[in-house]
Amino acid sequence: MSTELRFALVLAGILFNQAATAAGSAEKGKAAYVQHGCWQCHGFAGQGGVTGPKLAPNPMPPEALSAFVRNTRGAMPPYQAAILSDGDLADIHAYLLSIPKAPDYKSIPLLNH
Ligand code: HEC
Image (tube, rainbow, N blue to C red):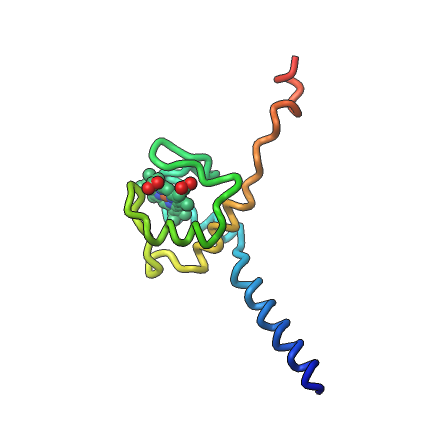
């Protein structure tokens, strides 16, 4: 095998690995979101609740989500990695990302008479 080919394969492996870890599973994330009680304050669809702000649609980037959830000193209790793993958090982000935007009211005939 040529050195160039070997290098290309190693690079492809690194890139593939990063994609695999960065992109969580929305399905597993929904379960983790429920299991860790995020819904109690933020609502089941991240729509926001009495205590917690809206998280979706358009969630913050994964790095910001992780930084907030791990270090918050405000009204929300922080979640350390021992309780909520990085994998679960990536999945939760994927779940929030999967929540569709509400349709524009202009696309709903009943609201446009
Ligand atoms: C006990 C209620 C409660 C629970 C449970 C909770 N949160 Fe929160 N969360 C809050 C409150 C209140 C804030 C606003 C606090 C602040 O800004 O300091 C907040 C803020 C956030 C923010 C920042 C939102 C923004 O736009 O600034 C994120 C992200 C977040 N929560 C994610 C989560 C996730 C993920 C979970 C589950 C692992 C979770 N929260 C569980 C109450 C909660």
